[in-house]
Length: 132
Image (cartoon, rainbow, N blue to C red; front, side, top):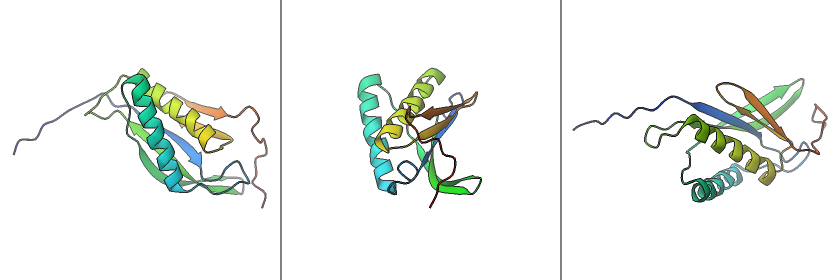
């Protein structure tokens, strides 16, 4: 058996999205997140003629007594379908914008190799602590 090796320039980026609509809304089911991502990937491919796979990791945000279950949506430059850094940045930023709207988030953080970007709704709730 022959094994083929493919290499691409390393590029990783991820976004973190909470599991609650706003700060006091309904819980977002993981299946809703997966459907939103899948729909985005299909539309993105039609528009840009490429798309990217992502990996979903469950995590938790902790900030001064506020905690929320969340997901990290991670993208890498996949050697089977390599892209330029600029194309990967476009993908992750457009995905973040779409999820911000579709899943009713106040803000989403995108982490890239060179910087972190906070996307925030213009009318976002500015309170720092989730009150029960």
